[in-house]
Length: 438
Image (cartoon, rainbow, N blue to C red; front, side, top):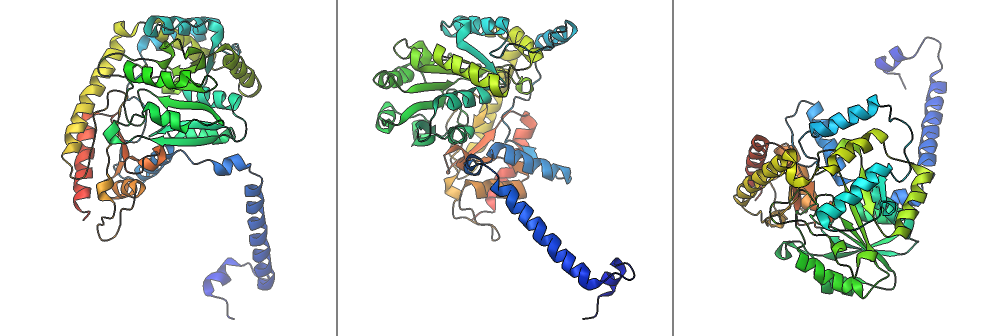
């Protein structure tokens, strides 16, 4: 067969085209085998894990922005405020004082004492510094606990909607997540009878967040007391209470299930400085736990990460030593989030087919959008919340997170950790795009 002119130009004079063809086949075969080898070397736990949906959507929106598209991102779980100046100053002072060496694995003694003081001052909880372990963010704190307590086949009860990483962390530690569901009619909060029904001889733990990511729902003291009554009858079940959004609440006060003495020795309190102090990049989280859990987490950290950044820990001390009631930065941030929440709820309620509750904390709205399932604009048919989020990203250039990632396929998560102007523009775009779905 005659070679095309373009191919002739690409081959040097005297080069045997048959050899070139054979070499190409060999190269393709080699690359294919190499690719297959790379995949086969991965552990089964990696293949079982899902990619973080929030990070995936953030990546998709970033890729569009790099192409010049005006994308409004309402998918990220990060305050759009800066770290308080006093906290930044404390970090600078730590650098100048050469506090840049390896810190103790479970955290600097003064930080662990500051955390113990904060828990006593704000929550009425008594912990020794030895019961506190500092990690690289609350996410790693949770992962540490699961790695320390789970054997293959152990079950962890995960109320849905849940934060995207809970079930993946359970699977990473060879455990099995067991889901129980609460819809918008229940304000996304589970009932004691659901917990009781889900507990089996294999149940090792339960994990939940209050205030919740993704719903913003908060368990009241009365509701927590009812849950504690169930757990009291199952003293071998560990309660992992994720309280990272503790400081972002719009009325009343935060309550911890660890405040009930009858179950306190079953509770691991998880918290950190990322949300309430706008310190996401500083990567400081912590647990307050029964001594045996704290010791185990200290042991595992000593083998695979050692201590968190010494500079970040010194900054966290400054953040935690201040009473929330006296922090103007926190007060202003929470006030801004409440204003945005109220605006977002009002605007979303004007979109036909969007049904929402009123979140009491965090900075997310989690509307039910299942009314759009089965609708189409002639090119795209909406079968689930993932379809709707991709449609809105393509058509409205607004990034949201599908509810499938949170165990609630009929919902989407909207973050209002952005400006009022962007919220208004984004919801207008969403409304216009939804008009085209019939």
